[in-house]
Picture 1: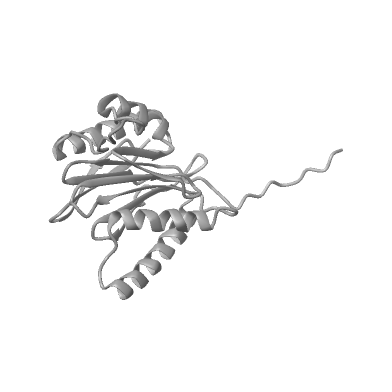
Picture 2 (picture 1 turned 120 degrees about the vertical axis):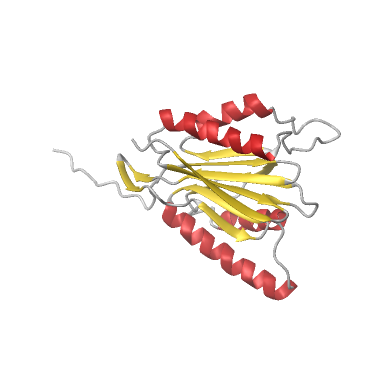
Length: 223
């Protein structure tokens, strides 16, 4: 009889989906509030959106223990930056910090898949999308998490981001107005919830504008 070895992993995948859309003067960041492991729901009211600065908001799916550890590191490094520069980080600066932080841990990575949304120095919306080891890209819209394979084709069809190979470089921001972007986010989550068991319960939406942050909540399927 062959000896069975238990396969232990330091990681888990707690599911969930994150979406961000950048506009001319706003950024919409959204995520569902379900946290799962396997076929069990651990929480129906777990926020995956974290405010890093006044103009930068992080949304993360994957292993939520690693996400919490990552947020703690980013918070402490941002605090040091504020003491040294007497101002908060801009969203592009926070994007580089997040990339460096993830890359530093590349041999034992944070199992976290991040979307960073916010406003740049000109007040335009910006979205940065990441893999687990810090490779990132500035885009007009992005989705990460268990429902991203269902949502990204839908967003590609609706928003048709310009190719990064075009010269001169095209602006990545989407042509939608803020209410249209919020409606689109609600539509894609309602659709993804029908097919993805790890996405559901509630949808939390943060809308960043120059005058502050507004939050909306929408109910999703509970089954």
